[in-house]
Image (cartoon, rainbow, N blue to C red; front, side):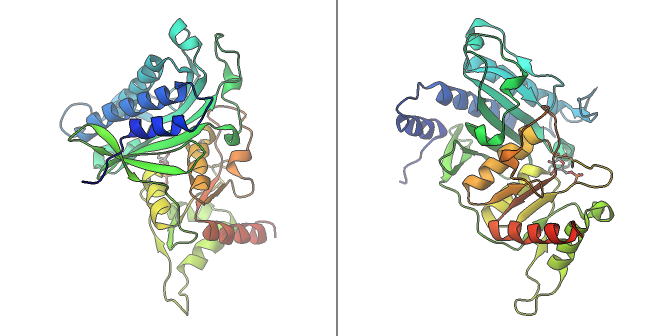
Length: 337
Ligand code: P6P
């Protein structure tokens, strides 16, 4: 029988390789796994109980909060607090940072950024959704109350980043800077089990993911790239195919494994794009780069961007290295003429 490595076993194995590790990070990740299993339980039965549909309130983005959004947010916050390793959280669902000002958490070394349930408009049509998170080491002194500066760090300072995809199966994919590993939830034992060790994204691919309904508002370089993808390639026929789910985690995860590019560019109506730097673009970018891909805002490496606010939006281009280089050529040529 093949050896099954659970998420917790993997985390401990990784910890042993870090001489100065105290187990704090391992403890934090363990609680992330617990929260993911709790959210998965509710997502899986969303159609069966009255947890579907509107919670009747709006989040700070002005988006109608689905009840599962609220549940996921509260569940992750509760688990992060219980871990004792996290001193504050920045969440898409909260306007301000959530500070844990208790003895248990004030000594926490880490701060946590998250979109607790991304793609939630897909919940009641049974399309895959996800949790996206990133973890920084705090800058403020241990024992003191965390503050905003703990979060306004470049993505290159991240300790770890990951996502949970609640799809045909539930997976947790994360990196701590030593490659990307995927764990599939085995409901029969209630554990995330290593199913995708050392994920590397193909250098190129045939999938381009973008909401072409916004075509008219795109920069010229993006329009020209879309037309390039749609042209018949004399040698290999129609090499490209358009795939867009409208759920970042689902679109990215497919492209990560198969090769492809995901683009949510700036538009005339949204000059800084739609996706949030801290808890969507940075974590996905960290994973993309660790898997051999690239992630930019069209010009700058995502992980080099200095955040100015916790809900800051940036244009987002990420995926296979060769496809990213090609779209960048289009952007540089056509956007600057
Ligand atoms: P649009 C979901 O609301 C989300 O934040 C991402 O998961 C997804 O990639 C994007 O927005 C979809 O946006 O404008 O294409 O519906």
